[in-house]
Image (cartoon, rainbow, N blue to C red; front, side):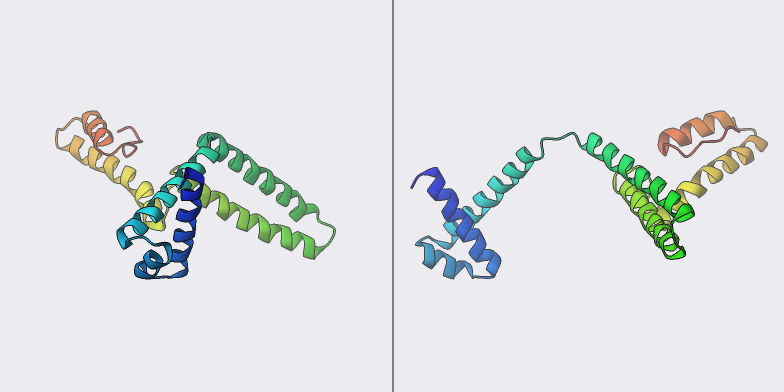
Length: 165
């Protein structure tokens, strides 16, 4: 069996397993042991992942930047349509779409790690710096050096000490 034939067989084994066929049935149908059938499916999955990775030979940051630009352009266009649309229905539809696109952009940025990804994370990002700076003010009243505290807190939890004491 050559490499092409093996790849086709492995694909058929993977398809059979995806349909829900048991390993015993697959092994019997292909004249293999169950272990060999599992290995064939694994080889197929690994080859598919390698093919997908090769097909995705792109810069993920460029793709993200492009998606952000597209979202912003859509938001701008929908804003204009929401203000200047031919009818009230067109304006309302544009504003609804603009709100949905805004949420999609926020989710995209959160997914990329550029924004907090949940209400709890948003609250934490908002509240921790205020707490750290309040702590530095209290520490200053008790004779500790606020700048050193802020610097150490920012090293321990980057981005927390955003205000100067």
